[in-house]
Image (cartoon, rainbow, N blue to C red; front, side):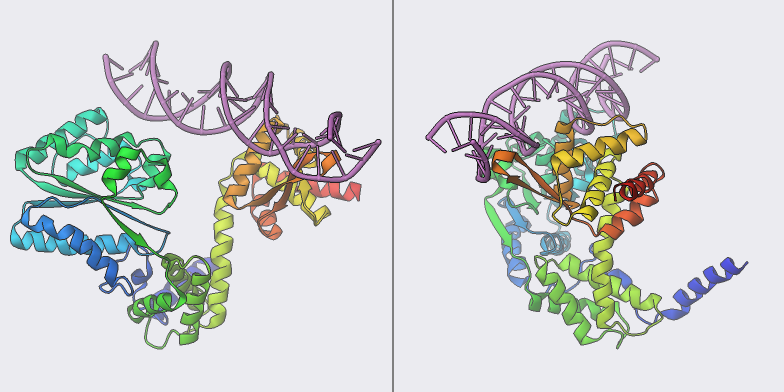
Length: 412
DNA sequence: CGTCCACAGGAATGACGGGCGG
DNA sequence: CCGCCCGTCATTCCTGTGGACG
């Protein structure tokens, strides 16, 4: 009964509240605002590239790249939306298709989305990929249409070795009868170009648009623009806004992070019953976002990586210098046998250590002790209290933490 | 200046599981 | 439903290596 009351309280506060947020959705990353501060140049550039499509001329393929949260997707969607409106008004035979490669997942589903954009019905599984491509070309020819295809997070395809589709798409115009397909590729990963097939790359990057990270001042403008409609008037102090911008600028000028920071700060203030977002809420939000990242990463880690982390956690608490591979492996096998799990080989553990390093859960560094060998120094990359919190909830691994505590007691 | 430690990390190969086409 | 293929995880075997020590 009492818990029911508490839940009601939460709901009531949420409904009556509205002390902070006016429209929370404005801060989501998939929201496309009417104004994109500091991206006027990029918008014009892209509009110039795409404009010929309105009178039926083939557009150059374009390649857009820049780090996450630099406005690539927002600018692309913004320009494409305008283009679509204009084309509809003029009755131009132009279709526009936006696909996020990572969300689509496979070649098949990307092609299925392409077909859907032309109202070609395809089963969601069963056909060969080449069959889908044929149907797509056929329909384009049949309707005598031009299409602009935007492939967001295109690096995902290459990393999964599914770049054959890209190759096919760059050659697609050879099979069309006068009509054409224009490609816009968007990538977060700057190094991705190196992995791309040279023919595909040269075809794709007829035009290149580069997005630089935002500066703190630019982030401030973006945030204040959004904050106007996101929050109730007076709910946000200017200093808090500046703080959000500064924090996000420190981390690669990522607007997405900045918006997250602002939203979480708002939520924290709301939960506290405050009707103003203060600097301390922003600071808490920074910590919370960081912690949540670790918690998420830790929760879904495979068993052996969890065991390894517990090993590092243990050795870290014994010695501030961090551990080395040999000692860690010894402890790891001990922990494994204590819960009747077959330990992996040292070679494999070494690989897992590297994976954990990439995930940012560990910091490893190869060092040489000369006469006494060459090894890796391993340190925890996560606050140790988070390891203890998250992994002690784990049934199997949780018991290891107790075991580990006993060991520590015994040794010393 | 060569040796040799204690591993790093590449290559080849095997075990397993899941989806696809027939 | 079955065989087939493919991707992932793990093992085995291997060669490579920075630098203190003798």
